[in-house]
Image (cartoon, rainbow, N blue to C red; front, side, top):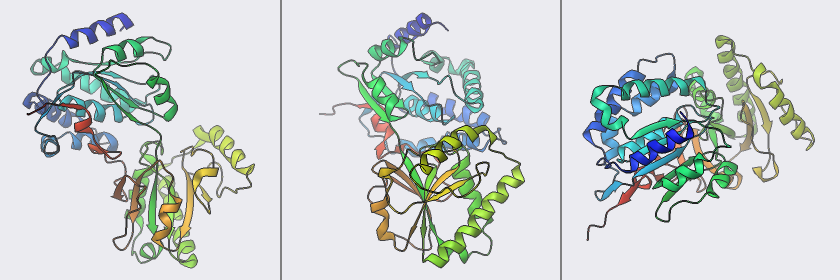
Length: 378
């Protein structure tokens, strides 16, 4: 589709009335889409998305939308390349709020994103959903295009998923005075592991499987995937639990026959950067994971590269956590034997294995509210 055709469609959307929030037609459409996605049994991230789009789940979300909410109008989504399912979550929430949508897909998106785009378009093509199809479009175009500026000048809501540099670049492009913007910048997440609780398990396989899902669905590129590991316990417990835990992680990769040759160049660069700071990396460059034991917070270290790299911290008490968390910390996934006082810097707390489960409550915001306009009831 040409830039001119994309722009023409966006202008046409503006001439159409918006839908009511949680329109029965939209809820039915998402239920139909959910059923298609739940058949992708070999892709757990797609099945998780399908589960999230079920009618029962959607109607549960509706309880968090204020009664005076209405559609903003035209929403312009700029979506990331690192998590293939993210564009659907952003679009579906905006659709539920009643908005018309232009969704820009990354040209670097993966095969799962292409699959999802195809399934969505096929579902939209059904006669029952032509009203929705007439107000939603998925596009891709190069960064050199002027379309981002042109679509920004039209939109009532701009949603940016990306790194800090991407957000800063796009935010230089002006919006209409009335328009609202929501952005999601760089975040880092971690896992809190109670060494004593791990050593008391009869079988560690289920725990490690949950950790694997949190980390490797998107090759650790999701903002909520653990990159920092906080080991709680005394030195003997921690060292024993580490050996047991990482040995079991390695077995998963042996069973799956996965290799990491495709990231060797990036890992080499990363290791050289740390070597210059005299920080040793534990493990071979071809291992499924590389661990670095750090003693203090992250302010003096290079940005985390993902790709199966973990910064490990050993703590003897939970009181030490807050001083170790960076300002942009998002999700703490935990396996601990008791409730604990949550660190104030973390935005989200989940059990190990649930880090990548998306929610309309994200980064400390209710996205249903953020993607809506509020009507004055006075």
